[in-house]
Image (tube, rainbow, N blue to C red):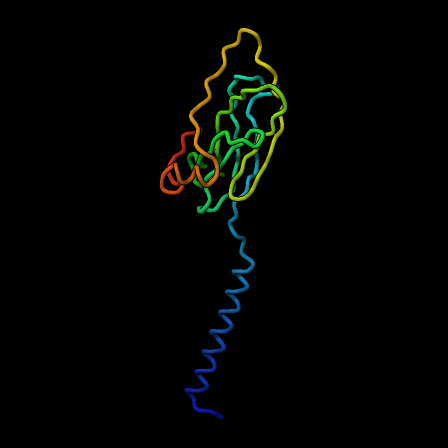
Length: 163
């Protein structure tokens, strides 16, 4: 039989080991925050025409490390912007841009965010005769270039419209 202080040391050791194991199980079972695109859509349109402005929106689930969102039309950058919250911080973040198609035909719009990508395909018709084309909004670069040129590695507001 050992001394009382040796016995106490073993109890503390076993208690610490048990606590560490319990915390490891709790941590392993805890959900992790991940960046993902939950929804991607064009709001309020069934038919699409050249020169007409449309609102394109992505609903996101993200970690604080990844906020830059890039939008593409047939693989070409439309613009990049930051995600935003409106009101309560518990609401899902989103990013929204104004898209003005310049050409008729099949368009595959895509959004990229933190390594995730989602697409939607639409067919764009020529604008009706006599219609006045919308002016495309100012744009920001997509991807890392957009983050770096927007200021502080993407932590300031981009120039795309957010609502």
